[in-house]
Amino acid sequence: MDDHRQQVQSRFGEFAQNYVESKVHSSSYSLDHLIELLDPQPGQIALDIATGGGHVALGLARRGLSVIASDLTPRMLGAARAYIQKEGFAIHYAQIEGSALPFAANSLDRVTCRIAAHHFPDVAGFVRECARVVRPGGMVGLVDQVGPGHREANRYVNAYEKLRDPSHNWEYSEQDWNDFFTSADLTIRHQETARNRLNFKWWTDMQKVDPDTVLRLRVMLRQAPREVAAWLEPDLHDSPDDSFSLWQLILIGVK
Image 1 (cartoon, one colour):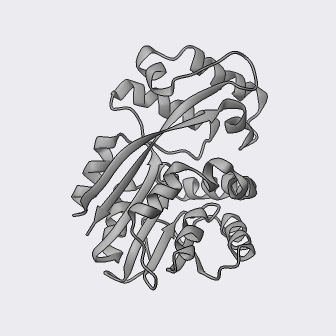
Image 2: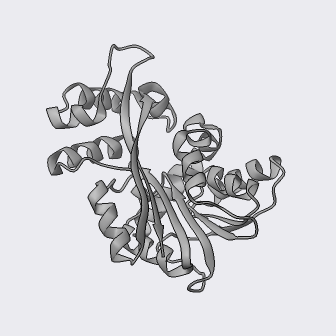
């Protein structure tokens, strides 16, 4: 786990500003919908885990919440702080890991994590920690990439993701996430999957993927088995407009 932690810190430290500026991360359906579903109220205390560019944390601060933005990667946390301060908001920051939260049980009103959990080595432990620290009646809000229910297709999709980003751990199926939440005694209030259509060049440029790996990724899309192609929906013409789909799960659990 220590090696994985260092890999995540190295990878996202290098590309921190890319994630602050990314339109996919800073303005999208999943961001706006997550915040609306959480029904945030002024004065509530919220923790945003793996805050990345700080977009969820900023959205909650704009709604009047007292927000703690946390991340494992110091440079990512610094980039988020600069972005949020530039927007005129003062929140709290903490370098912590999602599966070991240094907060008392029943102490927070909202806990969020968006487009990050597929990097976590212990997702079940992460969900248990979220459930532990949120108050009864409080909410845990998750957005993450979700894999297909077909086992072999899911392995292929995860191999594709990991080739582009070696710090990727695993994107779970919708049923897996249901099990994680219910096992942590969270009642699922809202659940949906949303298509996230991505430009292939943008996706590889975000992490400065080398040309050989870009070619391998393109081959994986072209040669994808039927179940994988149905999931990733590649549209390839060897042009800057080449694209494919990833799917995001939006999940709200109540304690």
